[in-house]
Image (cartoon, rainbow, N blue to C red):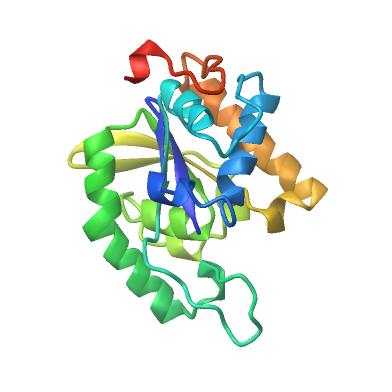
Length: 207
């Protein structure tokens, strides 16, 4: 799974269908947890519909970058974009930018995007018209820079960070970097925070 947080804020990671999968959606859980640590008020159950409504009420969105299911390898580890060969990665990125991500970004018209993980970074990089070497820049190097995408003629600021999944969040240094990047992204691009929503309730502006 890979994605991007966008701010109207609007972002690029999972769709609502995937958000319903409690077993694998550690990405959403970690993103919500980071936002809560930054002062955003969420219901205690990150997997419930009220938490998703709270997230969306703050004009935050997660778009899944790669919508193809990834098969497990021989070692039966969790499948990942980084575990694929260069040719397969390029095929996935080419497909998603043309078929999914481009149209989704055009529809959402985000104020800014935070690309989380290699797949999101590679895909969003395709919309940076002034650079052709971005596929060679690792996420760890890209995160300290500021970029600008162009989607259907409209400029969209782009930040980069690692994917907020268990593998990265279990490492204290990696988790701290992701929290720092999300905090900086919100500080520069947001004008409001998700408000409190109690379990079983929805804000009027979410209807």
